[in-house]
Length: 247
Image (cartoon, rainbow, N blue to C red):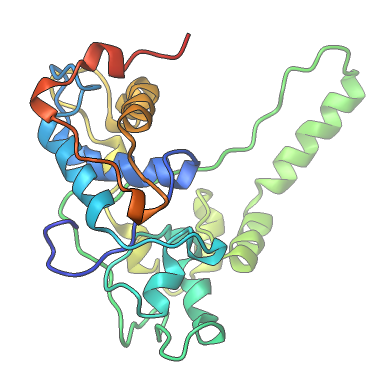
């Protein structure tokens, strides 16, 4: 993204699931299990810094997930989660004079085709092991989970909230004419990380706290452009301290 030649939107803060997913996706190409910088090469952190320093952002609430800046024409490239993309495009004219047009058949926008794929995030339904719950209550909870995870309910949920179900039977109901291309993109979160016994999703889980510490300590994602933080002296940083959890 940072070398694309176009203007791009960036998020405004370090924390948050969506922000973390964007960072994880951008750092994927720079994995280095031997690096003291949280298992990411120095080039990776430099790239993420450039993404912050030269990206366009806004403090407006409707801008925080990246769709509106692109829809309003404030940027030419943006990141956004696919589970709500089509629904937002269907309603794009509500908030822009020159909206994105065409959901399944784009007219004035396109997905960026990345060889590595994209970083998928799945949502799960689980049952907590709660002390003191009766057998009847447990049975009711399990019945709800089975109902909510059923094909018909998940298909209806996907239709209402523009999400793609993990339940394959639900997906067949929701998209009887074939799965939209956006949901067939390679999931690089499941790619094995060379030099480890982890896939990338597991690698992220193992290093995410270190990445958060690095970004927080170095001042990534400043909110006021007039108070932008100076770029770090990358070759002389104490990574052991930067990756250390707060006491």
